Image (cartoon, rainbow, N blue to C red; front, side, top):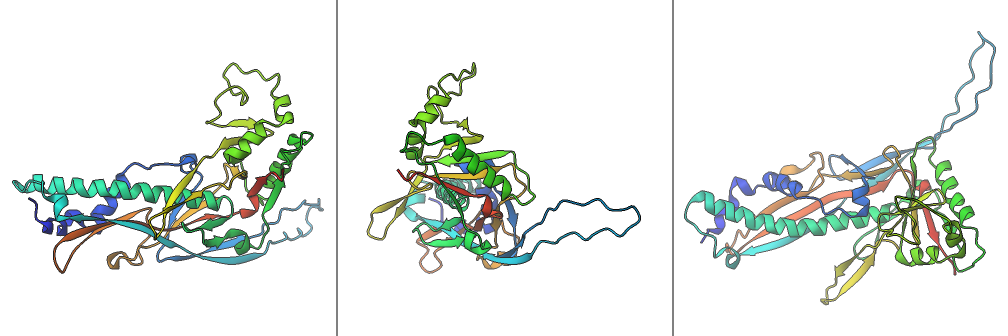
Amino acid sequence: MAHINIFKGDAFSAMALGEAIRVIPNQWGVIGAMGLFSSKGIRGTAFSVESHNGVLQLVQSSERGSPLPGQARGKRKMVDFRTERFGLKSRITADDIDNIRAFGSETELQQAQDEVMDRQEELRGSIDITREYHRAKAIQGVVLDADGTELVDLFDKFGITRKSVDFVLGTGTTDLGAKCREVTRHVRLSLLGDVMTGVMGLIHPDFTDKLMGHADFKERYKYFQNANGGDPLRDDTSAGFDFGGIRWKEYLAEAPVPQEDGTTVTRSFIPAGEAAFLPLGTRQTFRTFNGSPDYIGMANTPGRDFYSAVFPDRQEDRFVDVEAMMQNMQICMRPGTLVRGHTSN
């Protein structure tokens, strides 16, 4: 069998494994596949964002040759954040490598690498879904940890209040078009000089059912015809549908969180019966800040999306721990554009 010392070679260094785990295909969720978040590596774990309340003003005509009036300046302030570490480990024991042949160093090394890669793939899946969870919470303005505790309240950080729109879907006379316009107008006004291509609504299935069951929604699609499909009352809507100037997409996402007593608690990415509205096509509104890991050899280096390392048992040589982690924080730079949709009946 392979000797456990093989895991102490250069092939299993933190740098080599870090490159390997980044090669593993992303297990994208809906938000990851949308490409909303751009990544930025930082040195260390803390970072600051400049909040600039930009001012656009109408310019009065003036006589040629006369001094030009000054531009009103927006107020600037620095908002401080810090990245957090999220990671897991998987233990490889002597039993796990009993059947790895020791004949030929390349064969032994390759099979040991395969075992580590299998563990990395398992760990990377949990890291990916955690990142998706944090991004889902970031587009709602409050990033939560796996246990439900608050990591950062973006509304509090930027000193604003989240816009909330009650669609009153339990009342048959509700004008859904007016509710949609209330959402889109607020998002546009809150861009503060940025641009967007549209508004997206990620909706919990309970909200989907109430929306599509509403009389106003059915009436608006009563005579809808499209040779390419797209009628949400008739066709599959898993890819999304357009209504009231909003691109709607059902977001059925939840993940288990293991508890100390062996049970699990399920976390929903979007609260039951709610919708999360956000702008699309903006310039760096949604960011992932990647910090340096807590590995001595990588301290104060520009952060990356993922890290991995192996740690052999130094005392008794009985196991090797494979780690996978990320050190980051998901941020919406313009939380004023985020709108909560709900229904009070």
